[in-house]
Image 1: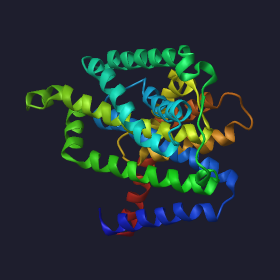
Image 2: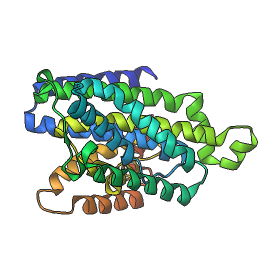
Image 3: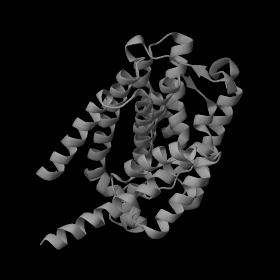
Length: 309
């Protein structure tokens, strides 16, 4: 990381941590939503952008993370902030079981298999009333020190910054470079000796674990865990956010999450179909900005630098 990038990162963090003291609570709630969705999207992009694995069931691990917190709270009385530590473990274990089967196929077969497993988990959660509450969901309440919007925002911001920082380190590590090689040419990666299935399974588990963290932050935010968090429609959201932001740029899904959350906030004021409208927006972005929003920003910065030389 060069000095300019470091300075921009520090400036962004300073602004982010100062935000609760500047804006109203109503806008803080939207900001919390953005942070959670940003982590959800970045975790997904480890699969799509880094490894070239199109999953249609990523919401399953998001929902498992939410239900881990809710079940521990509602059934065992475990505080929500302790459940957050358990969420990536449980989500990762579920991702390991699903991924063990899923990575044995590729392309659309992989996508359909992840969708099938995701729907299976959703059906289990919907039907197991005695354990999950079925379609009534399960309640989960943050402790008193996290009830205010300012406190919960800072709590979520800290966790999301740490998780996205960890994902960044993973993406630029030798493991991340191996995933890039698999994405670019799977057959050549096998030829040079990479254990492709092993790398893909590891990426699947890591992505599922971080999606579980995002879900564990969502449940206390809503004060409920609902089966809809595991539904296939929820899995479309990280796909759209990653595509809109730019799948080959680490910051792309964060840009996509910002577009999704803030556009959704505006769209819902005059439409009952925000996801449909956002899908049209993503289609236009993909058609006219192939590199996504982040790619367009990078190109604009590069053109400005070229003019100044």
